[in-house]
Length: 234
Length: 234
DNA sequence: GAGTGGTCTAGACCACCCT
DNA sequence: GGGTGGTCTAGACCACTCG
Image (cartoon, rainbow over all chains, first blue to last red; front, side, top):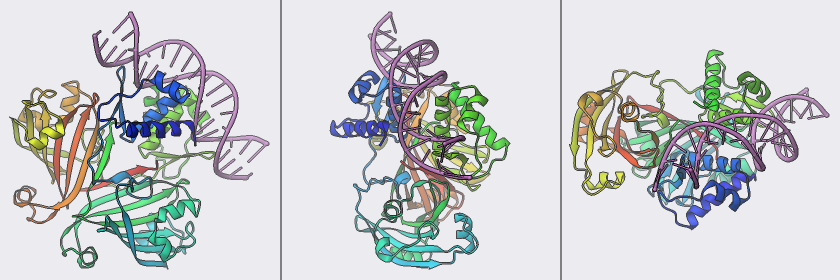
């Protein structure tokens, strides 16, 4: 692990340990350089990462300050999947409805940029958060990258399996979302009424090589899901 | 404007001008350094910014590549407000329903961290995208930062006014969102039925000083709004 | 092994905030 | 004016990819 990553972790841990609040000031660059025994550039890089993550904000000529902690009970929309989800706050479970090796539809093929005869794993799960129904998830994994999948693997975190067991690196994703009314099948699974509202998300995950490997559709239970997103200027 | 910002703009423009597609390779660091006459660090910084923005992805030992352009017709969820909204793609208009100087409610006071007797401007607007109803927006601006506001100012971009005319810098924001059913008043404004689905977003905007200055609530028309979000690992 | 991106440093100079 | 963050450079060395 690189130096700046360690500095990022340590500064973040420091904020937690010292119970620093919104607006509290961090040590100056000089102090941080001494404290972690690194150059100024490394501090700059670490602080920029923490700023992007929404942990701090920097004011030129004034100092570095802690950014307000989010409301509790909201899922981080940018990290809700495989990435470093803050799943400590929530207890996540899955009920596997299907795991099949199939010939993808046109739509799935187009999104995943599959070859002509390429097969994909179809995984359908009902996901729970704190023992409440969170969402229906339908995922398509290219067999080229995920050669084997089973029901028991799908019970656990699929992204953890992909990264640890298969040695792949998930790098970025595109999300597309809108709100719609539930159809009959969806409402039955979510234990809601047909026509009830739902957040519908399509997400395309890419490996570090830039190749798409997973296309997923999620339908969220509107009473059990709320999200937060932190934006940064520019 | 700093060098790295210029490099960011020029590289982005280059991608547009040369019609570069998903997966196309950019010049090497060496070439970029010569082309823009800057040091390697400046190229690194510029490319990291473009990576965060979802324009490119970098593979160590291999090169820098163009990331797929998004589907069209989706609003960038992270830039949908005052920031550099890609409003070239959409035509935005507003119908002002109310502009009043009021005593804030408890909830608004708590979010904006108002002083005891501080007043806020309340602005209610119906927002249109390509001449379709997009959302209802209720905003609260602290008078401390926005001393004057009028109906005609609210017709235009309020964020543009705040930044240009008042000289303030909007720096970051927190969004909280969930899906709900429309009540009677909301459905009337959006020309939908009571009980229809809607995306509900609360957003808190901060100045570069870290002080909150605007608290807004948005209720989106579910048939006229769809969004996209690009995530990056770590 | 050659090419290419990633990390890190020391140091110079600039821009901004505050009193 | 003193303190503090922001930009930029040249150069060294490391890590990864690919033929």
